[in-house]
Image (cartoon, rainbow, N blue to C red; front, top):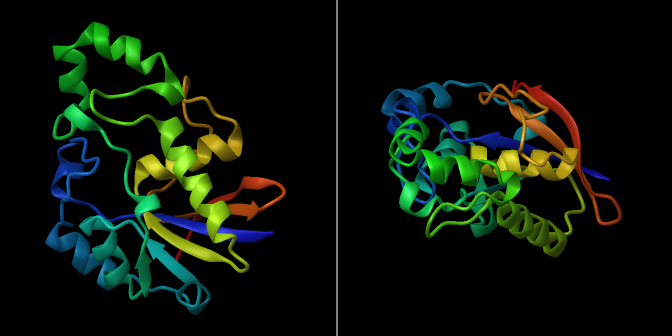
Length: 192
């Protein structure tokens, strides 16, 4: 069994505005990049094999932390389709019936022209199975991908509150084996 450390990208302008980013390629805030550049990362993490979403905010996060990450399309954020650029509050106000119906689907909530969390789980699990990592790895990815991993590891259907409340500035530890799949290790792993 190996450990997988998942780290969310740093803060973007759209994070501050609570806008749904999805596949929209938003760069980090300059101050977020600078903060990451000054974040100490322990050698035990630097020595891992790292993978990153190909979106700029994840690539910049890996670079700022001094992690030599290979980009991997399977780690890209959930496709939010027509909802990208809007906030959940805006969507709930403009389309209350649509949002209520979609949010009641949990793992199968699908934005128009987008994908659902279940599809994110499928692509993440397919990639892990194909990669079949033999040693611990690190992933710089997105909140949607990490939440999908939590759903898979904890049996969470996304119909209620997340069973884990992460500090998005720290890594989450998962376990992986071909026989047992994805499991949850621990929350809030500091990088130093």
